[in-house]
Image (cartoon, rainbow, N blue to C red; front, side):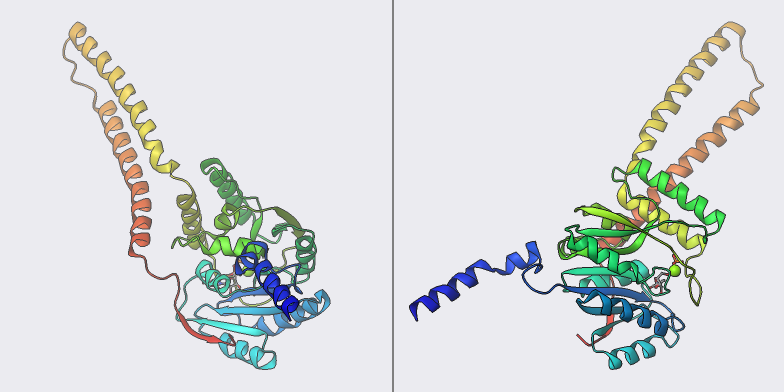
Length: 337
Ligand code: UDP
Ligand code: MG
């Protein structure tokens, strides 16, 4: 009796709840995986998505849940998701109160995860579910973040590729952290990385940057980004532009600080030019013409001031959003939790 008690006490002291968080449950118990998928008006893709996903998960021989976030869809998405849940209770649904945008929806999904690893993927089958097998394989080898790298982007238009390239260059140049190119949200995160991500409570959520910021041991897996199987992309160029601004402003303050140097250089140039004008006036007397140079100087300075003010505005606006401290998303129902 006494030995039994001692043994159970030892077991308890070996497995504290802290261990679960720091080490993950793996390899102590059979590993489990949560798949987070955000849906915004994806009624045409759901059935095919689940068919392919289920086939892959069956092969992986792992215990799984699919966490579907319905991001304010106005079509039959929710109804079809509920059908999937009724068919298989491992499909869980988080129904947001309105459309919050993909970054927020993804956050809602990650907050609901409780597995040893989490895979984030899109609903439109542009991220092939078969790649998840490779993700799991690398994760079992000990990598904590396995991200999908789009091997070819020839399905994207030339303009989209060029602007994406420009963005990566600008981002990596301006911010200290560098995000790998052609990497989206399609990835596997170990429990440790998910717990770390939950601590980043900023409202301005540039997930690609946040995924990168938390660190951990990482590896990329090439995959073929397919065409959207149905429906259309929710990202137009205006949305992409704002997304790029969010990304840059949330990871660097260089655009704010650069005006100190621009100001110093302009002031120095102005001082040199003013000295030249004073000396010239002293020697040659008053010289009335000068309209063109005056105009150029005024317009140039006006332009620079408006530009710097605009950049200031971008940051102040985001600061305002953070200061309000509103919740990141609101949930209408949770189904299956
Ligand atoms: N999405 C979302 N909320 C939005 C916009 C998109 O949850 O406000 C989801 C969408 O349903 C899809 C994923 O985010 O599963 C990627 O969206 P999309 O295919 O439009 O982006 P792209 O692949 O063109 O970058
Ligand atoms: Mg897509």
